[in-house]
Length: 350
Ligand SMILES: [Zn+2]
Image (cartoon, rainbow, N blue to C red; front, side, top):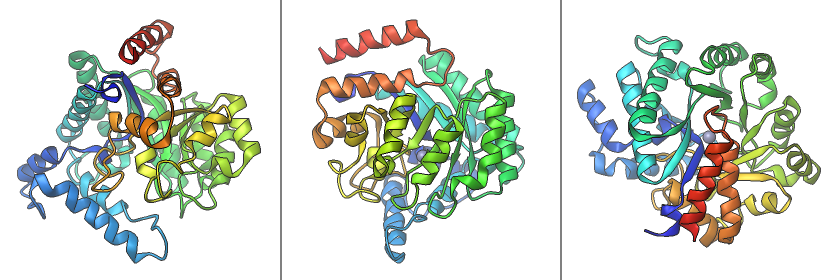
């Protein structure tokens, strides 16, 4: 086994609906009597083909080229069984790739199109994660997302839901979705609600390449612990220094950004951030929907890309991996756990 595969890893930024296994989709489609456009084995290629076709319709790299793929996946996540099974099987895939800590995020409101309430959706995802904790020794928890394209009342509702489940399987709160069309300031009262209820918070900010530095600044001002993507942070050196000084962790998602937002791994700003002293970690974002057909996002692949393509040394990669576990929102990740993780990490690297 190569080093990238054997090192113990974390995934702090991973969307449930974008990370479904094609076999899971095929089984659920059969149960629901839905005919898939292609066989399971070709599903990934089909979805990425759709994504790239839509991207070319827009005038530049389309910000919305992937959304209907998420809708496609979410039709198979509308019952408690579907949500629990999807969560557990995602954990199984992660464990098989030596991911020992995962924080899986999802927006409960996207799973209420049939009979579920948002609260039922959280219950189902938490129970799938609990099963993975008990049978696979997975660590981490669930992050409740709000969608930035929805009104602020939705964000407040999701923040309240995250707070109600805090300490019972939910570990944090996030705002996700189309950053190009919906700046973060629309959702300020939702952010305040999460803060008021002491919910650990990460926010998608600086994912889109243009006009998103303000979103990072708002996230920093709000007092977030982590930022999702943060790729435009290097456009504002003062803000980057502030993020470093505050010890905020930036959840970088290399494969998710490359090709769509940056031409290559080497041009990804993770190096600028790392050299400026920002705590960066690496994540897959979506196992099924991120990247392209030829460039798949998966946990050990991200580590390999960081070293082989971005050019980090293994010593630097070690720091990035450690940043990931240290930034976990999970109360189970204490000093003892991190110490043992560090020993496993060093053994794999030696
Ligand atoms: Zn994301």
